Image (spheres, rainbow, N blue to C red):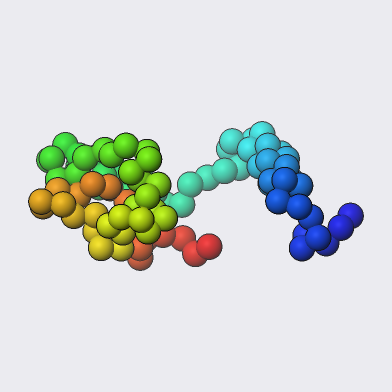
Length: 94
């Protein structure tokens, strides 16, 4: 097997897909972190109160890639959050 650095992008993606397929066969072994439930409830509450709204996927990608307002700035526009992302302190380490 070649070292990862020597694999092409396509080969790396195929490996990732194969690994994910294997890991995801047993859903019970894929437990979400405890903060996920809190983050989802917080997002649902913000949506219900009108403090947040869904945005188009293309716009979300631009925000995530830094092409528009960033999530770090809160995605605020006219007092309405455009995304319901969990606070950074709740995110797991990468």
